[in-house]
Image: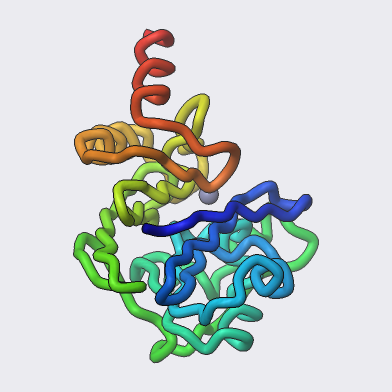
Length: 203
Ligand SMILES: [Zn+2]
């Protein structure tokens, strides 16, 4: 049984999740400062999982690395964007660039595979569309879907790394999975039924 806390910081409105059970905590994305994480969980931080490498989801990752000394999971494509302010969009949207040459041995590259954290299997699925580096993480019947799906729609695909055809393909794959609840990169969580109902009304 896991518990999920959603954290947000004003500037970006991106969601950072703290996922805990009796074994420890894991963090999904890095959009709030370290102290917000420390106020939320007293358990050891076992890992950080990155849904995609747009600046608003990785802004505090270097601070997390220094504070928590735990492995950071992301796709290889996301890893390549960490050091490139054009590709992580920070140059376009932020007053300062985000560029971090993340040490290779701090990263666990993932794509379509299952690994274990907190004694729970964690399934990863590459979901290109909003970005080519996007990953969904399935844990205990819920899905952390990054900016693929939102309560009221789908992620934008107008950035250089976006692709609407791939997004629909990814969405279809994700909706085939048995998922109780989706936890997106922005906005409130939602059920699969609510999402499918919203989509069908728009048709
Ligand atoms: Zn994004």
